[in-house]
Image: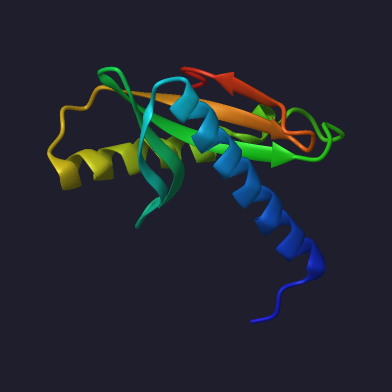
Length: 119
């Protein structure tokens, strides 16, 4: 399976964004529970404990907003996928389902716009 230079660039950019957001969340007092949590329904970029809530975080990293803001790329299908990922997590862990769904917008300069309860 070959990957184009553009695919590799996107993957590297995405990983960098996820690391920046994980560091940001830690500085906000959150505990990172899982990164790149894979399920049969898809992958959650970050699951973090914030007080008594679990935050399921979709990280969107962009070099520009030419095609809209990063959070605008989190459409209905992606939101539905995150709901199923959360249900799967609760079934696996037997934890009380007290959660929110956040979106972290990361820009090429390292700026993070963090949106709690984005959906």
